[in-house]
Length: 113
Image (cartoon, rainbow, N blue to C red; front, side, top):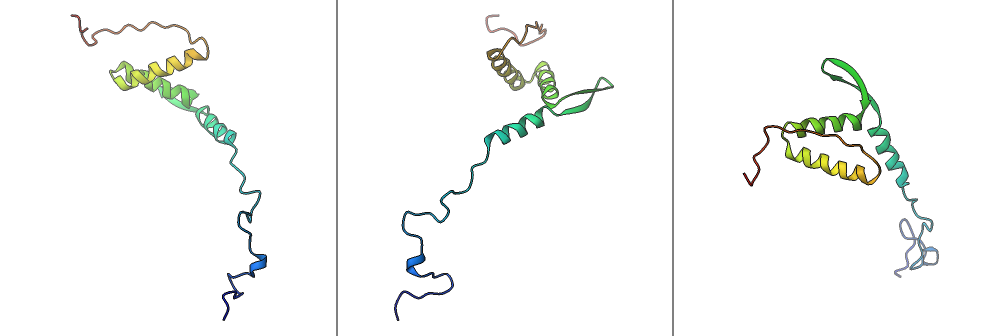
């Protein structure tokens, strides 16, 4: 018998794909990266309600996350403080973020005494 059998899963040699030629020349279309950024933006800018000092308030998820980050930094979480400073540096690159003075009392003693 010859090696050129034809049947299920064995098309004739003349109708097989030639080497270097794809069976799907256009290929699968790439995902639109703008769609992912729109999903992230929509999710972070979604308005939700939260409670602050017994009152119901409305804000975006980004705003609430930043408020929580500030609260954690003020309560002594050094990683939250570092993250907050990184966000401030990033924000200052893209525009005026204003100036606020924060006074910290009872912090760690300075190394020089």
